[in-house]
Image 1 (cartoon, rainbow, N blue to C red):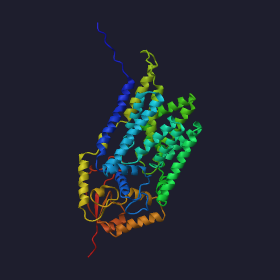
Image 2: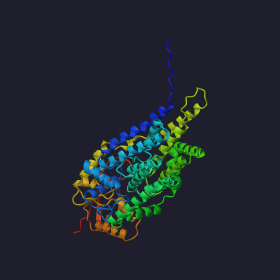
Image 3: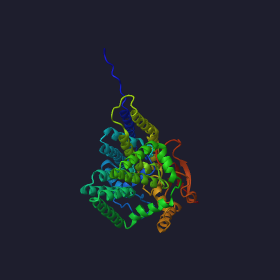
Length: 500
């Protein structure tokens, strides 16, 4: 008589497949978004304008003017994007490609962290999958023409070298990576500080090479860039950003970060991470415990501080998501029982419980990727926008959107976000000079047309010198960015003709 084989449910593999689906969804969504010729997020065009500034042979950190005001970010992403743009052409694609590749690099490093610590490849893939599952939770930022993915790839590489390569030459390499991260985004120093303290306490022979090299490279880099830009580098990167954070602190997010951003969508992973750290603490694995405590403090602490800033979006949370993904993989590997137990053995319950928790966590992060991908009507509306701007006579300013006027054959001007970041913070002569130039341009009708996101842009001056002509988009659903602030350039104002 033929024996019937019993089918054994492999909970671990099921969880892996559920998680890996998120990686596939992210990659497909990114591929469908990467070549979209218009903005996915309202600041992307300004990022391309920064690259054009470099390709035109101009400095990034210059006195603010109507023509150009830099974003308050260090220069590494822009210069790397300029290289890609030289090869691939100027536009959104080269910048998004950098971010997409960096996001895949983040997943690879999450995999490496968990595999190196646990020796388990399945949990390592599942950990990377959890990070991919947070794509929508972080406002679909991974593949945008923004700095965040490159920055976090470099920070994760720095942490990896600190943890797994504590030799002198490797610590010098780690310092070089930290230097690159700090010149991608200045909050690298907040993440690095707890890890540097860890190295000081647990790598007594080699920490001077890490700290010393980092100090020389970062301090020297800041000094050189500041000298090359006549002090404007420090003004934009440190003075403005520091004042912006203290001046625009969103107090409700002090608690809301933990309740809304962390616990509601990621309570399962946070619970597992807390249990993992507690078990390691009780087990007295000091070096192991304190590394992950420092890593957690740096990554989640930086997300918290960044999220408190006025205007912060889901991208501020990505560092926390990276850490929690690693914690998810480490926790599952720690508590999962790999031994095969008899059918009625109560120890089987632990695996079933962990499997259920994992399924719940992935289910909590479910989203519709189609909502994150511009459709054919958006592309058609964008083409219509470019044709409309090109048809306007004379100079045209589109203050809330970069690069799009260039596509219509018009000149580039300062991005509204960069202007607001300066004028709402600086109360001194720099602000007054910039505002005088902008208001003077409106009063003198320097532009034949203005294309605005709203009717409130410099409203009193606007209505005295310009008159509303028409809207560009008749369909209320077209040409909105799929992430970030909901803005689109829709209102055309024409300069008033002098009275006869």
